[in-house]
Length: 52
Image 1 (cartoon, rainbow, N blue to C red):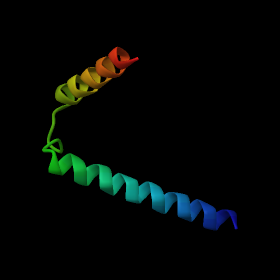
Image 2: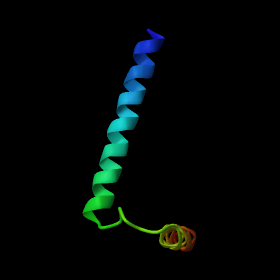
Image 3: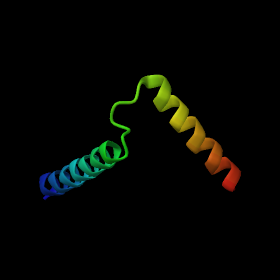
Image 4: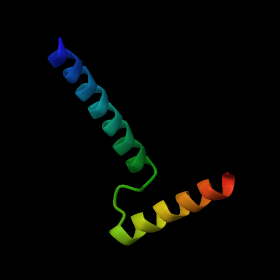
């Protein structure tokens, strides 16, 4: 039973990762450099803090 639950969780995680990667590619974010990724993350964090 536990193995089945782990397999289901793993499958869900893999499906989520596929969706994330597909959205990143569609948004043109799949070829960002590390410094560009850091900038996107920093901006998102600033916006979340401001929304509080």
